[in-house]
Amino acid sequence: MRNYEVTFIVDPVLSGDEIKATAQKYVDQLQEVGASIVHVDEMGLRQLAYEINKRHAGYYYCIEFQSETTTYLTTLELNMRRDERLLRFLTIALDKYGVKYNADKRSGLIGKAKKKTKATTEVAGAGAGAGAAPSAVAPKAKIAKAQPPQPDNLKRIEGIGPKIAEVLKASGVDSFAKLASMTPDQIKDLLNQAGDRFSFQDPATWPAQAQLAAQGEWDKLKKWQDELKGGKLVNAPAASSSPEVAAAVAAAGAVAVAASSEEE
Image: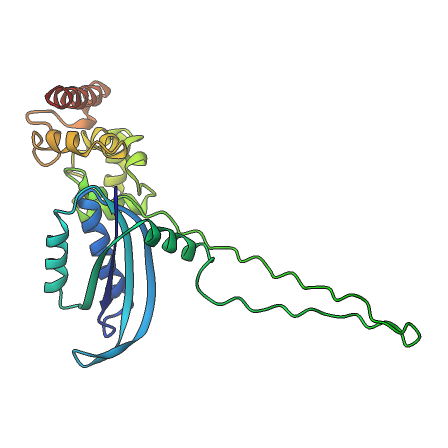
């Protein structure tokens, strides 16, 4: 597994929501190509070393990620180069020392200089003559803030678009594992509660797809998705019609996985 980080500067004239949406766009792009997000560092507004596009400051982000391939980096950088919301970007490969440095920095071991603690001396009474031995004040241990886990990109499931992904996340379904643990009927209920515009969706294959995604079986998932049409089994009835249909969908997913395994 190879380690990389991409640092980019977002135009500060954008609103706070637009800045965050810009950064999330590239997090999603990396997840869509199978990269694993290690850390997203929102570095905030900083002064630029020199003027860029009549801007003297920019909003900095740094995304550290892992990947087994580099073929998509050219596309990622091309998208960044065309994005008018970005002032600059830089992608670098990390060696083991760079990975360790970033981990130590997140843990608070590197960064701000530690203040030297002054020793305190207890002065003896007037008749004692000599002072007591100085006692050093122990520094307070710095507790590193835990970075919240990045939610899975549910749009990688065939049939789930940006709006449906938002509906699922709003209901607490923000990972492939959670989606895989649900039945099609349970997913259908969430969609119906979100409004009529989502009621026509057929989530029959979503749990089976999510199970493959949760296990990291991306090649097998891709082969199966190529056989689906909008996330649906061709000529299959609606998922909510009966429990038997849901079982048939799961069985079809298992057959697809087994077939792809034999091809390998």
